[in-house]
Image 1 (cartoon, one colour):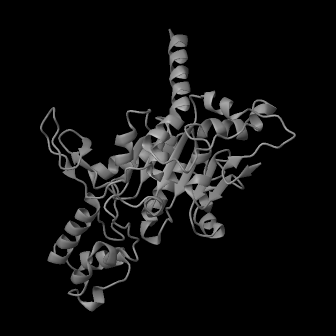
Image 2 (tube, one colour):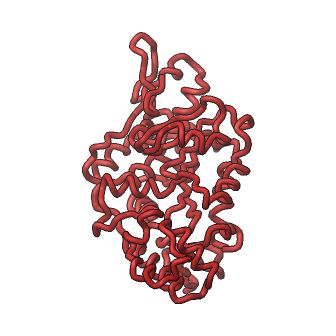
Image 3 (tube, helix red, strand yellow):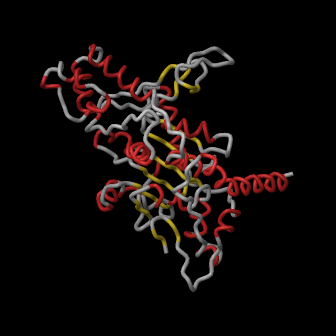
Length: 363
C-alpha cells in the first residue's frame, strides 16, 4: 500500500529491496514537476535564505518587498491588498507611470540578490531527485531552482527546466535565441542576455508575446503532451484565478483525465486535500493521485531519481516482487551538500552503468 508517497512492504508479501530500487534503471517514463510560490516558501521555512530575506505571497508582497511608500501615493481607487490586483490596477491606469517603473525595479532587485544557504535545501533535493528525461517548470521569479541546478550540476545529470513567469536568474538573447545568466554577455558572440520580464497585469498574461516566455511554455507543453510522461507533481501552486490562462494551457497540453487514465498525479500543498483535489480535478483520473503536505512525504523524496521506475513497478508490475518493491527515501536530516551527494552516489553510479551497457548494446 502507499502511505505518504512511499510504498510500504506488507510483512508477509515478497518484494524487491532498497538495493534493487537503486540498481533498477529504466530508460522510459518521465516526470513533470510544476512549482508555485509555496515551493519556495517551504524551502525557506526549512532553510532560510542566505541573507535572511523572506519569500512573499501575493497577500503580504507589498509589506515584504517594501512597496508601502509607493502604495501611499497611489489614488485610493487603485489600491488593493493583493499585489497582482494592485499592479493590474496601476497598469491599466498608466502602464508607463513612475509608480509602475519603480515597482518593477524594486521587485527585480529584491529577488535578484536572493541566494540559497550553504546547507542542502528542498531545491537541492528536488533537482537531484530527477533526471534528463524529467522537467521542472516553475512560476517563481526567485533564483533558487537555477542555483540548485548549478551547484549540483557536476554531481549528476540534471533534469530540464522551464521558467514560466520569467526569473531573475536568467536573461535572453534574441540574437542567439537562447538564455543565459541575466546581465551577462555570451563568451562566444558577446551578445547580451537581457533580464526577463517578471510582471504582467491580470487578464493580459499572453504567454506567446514574449519570446523567452513562449519558449519556456512550449517546453512544458511538449513534456505534458508526451505519452512518455507518467507522473506530474504540483508543488505549492494553487492555480489562482489570476492564472486562468496558465491552467487552460496546462489542461490542453495534458488532455482529459480519461485519456491519461494510467498516469499518476501528485499534489504537495499545505491546504486541505479536498480543496486542492478540487482545483486539479480535470487532471486526475479517478483515484490516480497522491497528496502530501510536505516535500519529504512525496514520490520525489520516496524514490529519488527512480520516480518513473517506481511508477512502472507499482502501477504496472511484471512480477509480484515488483508490485511490492521497497522505496528508497532520502533522509530529510542531511546536513551538508557532501552528505547529500554521497547519499545519491549509488543511484548515479547505477545510472552510469546502465548508460554504458545501453551504449554497448547499440554497437
